Amino acid sequence: MPGSLSPQLLEHVAERFRVLGDPTRLRILQVLLADGELNVGELVERLQLSQANVSKHLRLLHEAGMVSRRPQGTAAYYDVADPTITQLCDVVCDRLREQQAEEARIFTTA
Image (cartoon, rainbow, N blue to C red; front, side, top):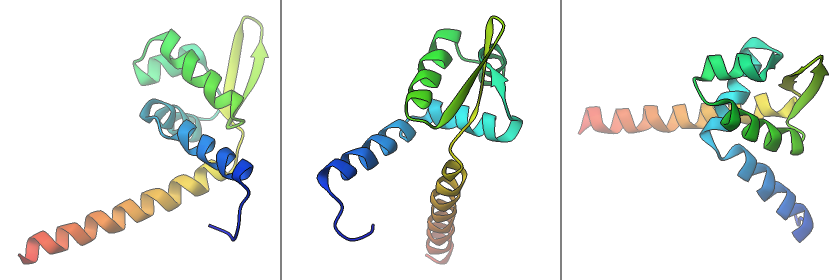
């Protein structure tokens, strides 16, 4: 982490990680990154979750500025609005893969 960050900025960083700390929200982001803009019904179908559950998580992602919302008629379409989401997920996933490979090496040589 960069040098001295103010307590207020650290609170914003912590909130960002809290939003990303839920597997359902990560699944929503994963689907949106893979498939592009989708409405709630399409997300419900792909994720096999209730409409209320998907809507709740989309609201939190939207409030955090991670997804955009585009109304169209009676539907709303969502898309990933924050380009750093992909970068952040890549960093975390790459590190997890490295750790998993290291653990596998340890267990195969033991």
